[in-house]
Length: 328
Length: 254
Image (cartoon, rainbow over all chains, first blue to last red):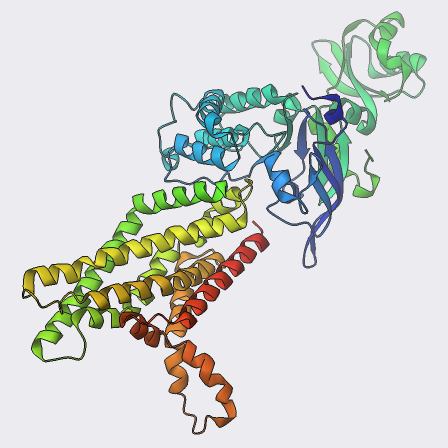
């Protein structure tokens, strides 16, 4: 999708970004990057500094220190170039109430330097992509539902086919059908545009993002691919073993595979004992645990690894102190 | 320049389609109609040293203080409050083009209101005038007065735009504009009224104060005298206010 020369360039680069309001530090020494064509989730608890960071990247707020750049153009020193390469949808998605959707998108296309001859076609394309064409194009924005307003915001972001799209909570307030639609739309951008999505809906981010950046209290606590973060942050591999034998027998069998294994009884169900088994995250026994337990003579019904999803990654990352963060 | 043109056309279109603009226009024309009617009545009762049109323009400060703030208050304050201004500034359009587009569109509306007012002297002349007597329409006073309100209007609208730029509250923007325009309009005359017995120690203030005499400017324009000093004053005042508006806009964080 991108020429080789552009692939080496970070689509979004935040280097040591700090924002202070008097004695209050909103973000501190925040550094991360987004590669061209990558979809990145920007996560953090409420008040962590996600929106502040996105505003700095979009150029609507100045950083106290640090450098933000969009496709190599400094947001502070060359804002016009940065703005030409980027589109930003703020959290509350402010829109003029008294314009019709098509009028608004046409105006925005002209302001975003879409070639005059292409304005009509681009507006029609994004309205089609965002499912606005049939049901909302002629309606006043002030009369639209929250879902359609969000679509208008996203359509606006995609109008000029920017290299970078910054979306602050794009699915907030949407119903499940609308969320699915927006998710598919974002997925379709992968490889064409770099997308940075701020969200606190972890499931949504897990569904669409290649990479996540997690901040807490204004500082970076983790960044990387969910699989890498899982390896990094998971303290131990957790399995649920359902067998006829007691937890002690399961533990004995597991220790024959890895002496560091620990176990705890998780109850009984129809004569089957449920045991929670913990193994070091780097244990070689992980790959063949089920067969190893069976070979040790256990009568197994089930042996499955407990999910360590983005929610657990997020909780583990936000629990640890910012000083322990992983450097890119 | 392309952004400026797009924004100007958009702002003009929004202004001309807005119910608020039409309400302000109705208020302006009702007010100026009443003022003109009273000026005609006054002239018909007894001989006056001024024509009805001149008399009406002498009260230019009434719409200036009470109508113009209603036009300028929404230019930025409303958009700042709703957040659409920040969204606008994420496009490649510069703060300068945004400020100039809003300024020129508001000034155009102000000019259109005064252009509509010119119908009143014409109607009065048509209905009440006697052939060969042009005093009711008084073209010199009419075109001179119009030139004055449009030229000074550049600075007055720029003051309103600046006031709207520094607050999120349109009502507060209107109040600030009212105070700033009242100060500007009254400044030249007010200095003369200060209870100062001797001007010697502040003689340096006399000349600048003379330049600020808004009513003197009106008199000059209405009698066909084009003095470059008020033109420079209004041009520099306009540029200063618009420059400060651009700075205020660029310095804002949303």
